[in-house]
Length: 297
Picture 1 (cartoon, helix red, strand yellow):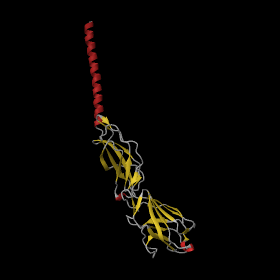
Picture 2 (tube, one colour):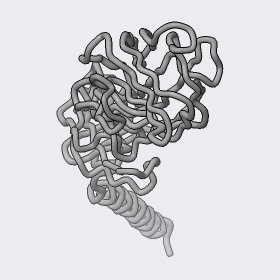
Picture 3 (tube, helix red, strand yellow):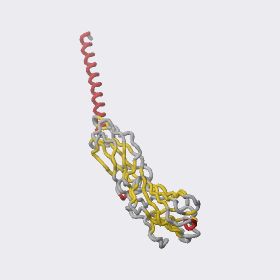
Picture 4 (tube, helix red, strand yellow):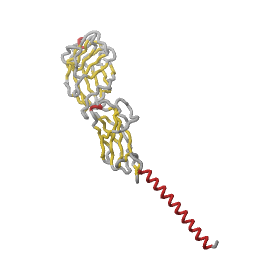
C-alpha cells in the first residue's frame, strides 16, 4: 500500500473513532437528562436541584397549633410550603405521610410561620414538614413531634406550715404547656369534705355538697379523716403558664385546718373558657391529657 493510501485509511479510522466517542457522550448526556426529568417530588429536577430547609428549631406550641422556625434552602427554589400530619396519641413522627397542606406559596426567604391548628386536635401529637418548592418538585425537612393544644403539665401543692393538713396559705398550682389567661372569679371558695367523701372542690359555691361541680376542678384520692373545712377567700391568678390558687378565709387556729393525707388526683371540671391559652384561645385538654400530681398538704 502506498504512503498516500495509508494516510487516507488512517484518517478515516480517526474520524470514525471520534464519531463513536462523540455519539457515546451524547447518549450519556441524553440518558442523564432523561433520568432527571422522570424524577418527581424529590430534590432533583431537569436542569437543577433543590436543597431542603435546614436549621429546624423545636416547634413551639401556640393555641391548637405551633410556631415553626427554620433556615430556608438556597438552591433553585421558587417558594416554600408547610405540610403536617396528625399523629393522634402517637408521640413520634415515624411513618408520618405529611399529606395535609397547612400553607403554600410561602416566600423563599421566610424563616418562621404559625399554624393555627384545629380545636379537634387538642392534645394530639402533630408532625410538621417544611419544603423547598419549584412547581411540583420539592425537598422537605421534618420537625420533631409536638403535642398541641392547652395540655396540663402538672398540679402541685405547697404547704404553708402545717404539714399533712390543709389550711390557709396553702397554694395549689396548675401548670400548662403554654401561657394562659384566666377569666373566672379572682376570689373563689375551696371546700374540703370529710371522709367518706374525701374530696376537695376548687371553686365551689356555698360548699353545700361534695357532689357539686366546681368552677375549676376537684381533688380526689386523698384521705380527710377528721373534719370538713371551707376556705372562702381563695385568691386565683394566672402568671405565664401557671394558675395559682392560694387558700384563705378558713378561720382561726385549729378551725382553719384539717388532716389531708395520700397522693391526690386532680380533675379539671371548669368550662371551656375559664382557662384558655393566650395564643389561639385553646381550651384545657381533657382527653389523653392526664394531670401529674406532686407535693402534698
